Image (cartoon, rainbow, N blue to C red):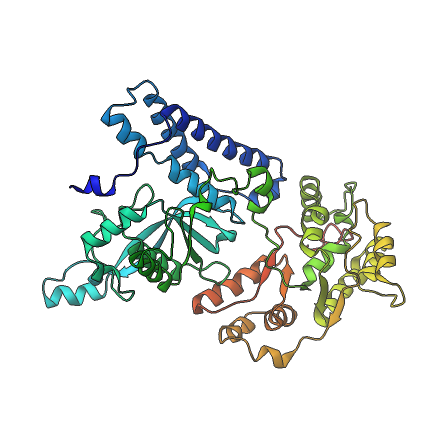
Length: 494
């Protein structure tokens, strides 16, 4: 009995015509999701952008191949083999796993890591060994689904238990059963030293694949965190075969999560329709926000600026920066489309230094309405409850002000003692920040609260320093656009 007989699946229950219909249904759902993305605002489309093209094209190509088989002899050996080896069930499993996830970013995306060249090949002599130690080789691995805004990598395999057991027996279970085994050899790699994985990734053992995904994840940081890896194995059932259970344990030993079972197959009634989960598949930029938000001075000014609350008639006295912001406001309403959704009903605070600086600017150049908004925003009248503050703020804006907006913003003292708990990179960050920026960003970092700011320069400075030290940094949400007070004179610097 040869290998094909040992691992051959049962005869297909679907004809070519039926598989073509399934491919069209799958493409229809992808199209429905793309249409859903098209209904969102420009900013929402940017935030929720999903790399679908390669995945969609693969399904289209598979559909065309299946279409050709509709005219072929269904009993011929070639037709039967082609139907059995169709990638469509794999694509359906990938799409099913994607619909169960949140915050989709991409399909079929490669990630890279550097590996010592000496661990990749055989060293011939000591001289070559010395040189190899100083060299690295760039490796990569394919991730089927990138979700949770980049923080989760999903690898799907439709390999069967029969196939796994055969491969394990052929390779020798001793090689597969040791989670500490070094899988850095050349097996499964092409001439360029990268994984030769194609299709559903079954060419490489799942354990080896888990090791490679782990290495790539350790070389990747998203929001100062390494991605979590999840394997989806719809044709594997745990708790039945000891060898399969041992294999799953070895995959989990790499730090990956493993999901098994037929409930993950896309034609199962439990799989949600795309219309029911489309919203969940969008990246939610506010999902990781803390329950209390630390508001930077740049955002305080944007919240009270006349530019943020309705149409402004251009005047000759306006600085060119003000003119540009008026144009941006016409394209994208800052408060209803960005800041109000970001703040939600969360508690809002700002440091005393940020508040002081904001008041100085408003008193110096603010219009009467900007000064009124400032008083309401910061609770100038302590006797007014939140509902009254929101209602009066609504009277100063052409846009709808959320009823649950948590006014007033509370002024807090930046805790010097708490800053001592920050990692070493914080000291370097502090040396590069002004006093007010220290109070805002180090306070947010030490408190564990999300800081909202439009100060791109400072946010990127902090990110670069923290990443250089590979430490956990502050949670900063960078508002993509800023607003100045409209009271600026034409010859005044913005």
